[in-house]
Amino acid sequence: MSLTVAGCGAGAPRASGHVYWITAGSSYGKKMAVPGRRGIGSVKEVALGSGTATFLARGETPEALAVGGSHVYWPDCLGGTVNEVPVGVGVPRGVPQRRRVTPIASLQDCPFAVAADATHAYWVNSADGTVKKVRLGGGEVITLASGQDGPTSIAVDGGRVYWVNDSANDNVHDTVNEVPIGGGKVTVLARNQHGPTSVAVDGSHVYWVNGGDGTVNEVPIGGGRVITLARGQDYPDGAAVDGTHVYWVNVGGDTVNEVPIGGGRATTIAIGGHPDSIAVDGTDVYWADGSAGTVNEVPIGGGRATTIASGQAFPAAVAVGP
Image (cartoon, rainbow, N blue to C red):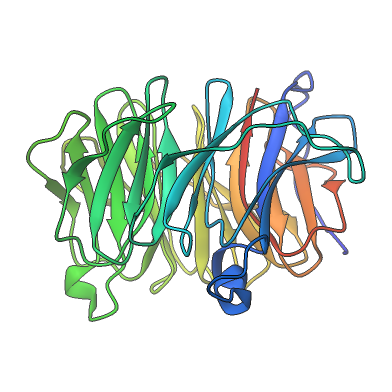
């Protein structure tokens, strides 16, 4: 894979931790999956700076992942489960596996996206239009919202759960939504969106990308004026936010991008490959390249892009954590 980068590095000390991703999941997994055939996808990790990818778990069709505390969580669409596995127990290929994967929710109707906080995992069921949660480790599954039209990406903060609806019918039903973390009234934060694909949140705003009209947007938590931060993007996907910028990938344009919170100049910080999903920590931006089979990083603000894992089978759904 050839990567061209723009800008200069942030110059901050290198972050420690791990990067996690799934293989043969998302749209690739759906095309490849055969009902009843297990072990198509996997969940993997790499310690930053180590260069060695390790195997955490296997699944039928892992679609997304989230890191919460000491575990990684992922939904398995065809398997109908939401699962957890401890972090830091991955081992290189060929070494005997000693790990414990726990389904914390079963009999779900194509769980598609997942988020986690210190106490619960949250997910959307794309087939039955529900938003749900369960205590970490397992327990009673609680429905937070129902009757949603094509729920996809999900995010959580200290008080609310957020998701986007990407309806197959028309843009009238494409919405950005929130519900109190304990359940209650669903609030539509933005209506008439055009193919929202990913959502992120910080302490004050909700951010999302629209694949249909090529925009990156924000709205205050609780509702208010929708602001378009970037236009003219080539099928943006993935959304991540830190204290200063919103980040996303352009699937059509093969770019990794950032724009200041509140608006400003959108900047391409990496070019090349076929980016899918995005994550950010205090120093770097991470993304998967589904066509090249790599997981990559670039300093916040731009700089030299680095491949931190190669030889992956359609990697997607990148997350960063302890």
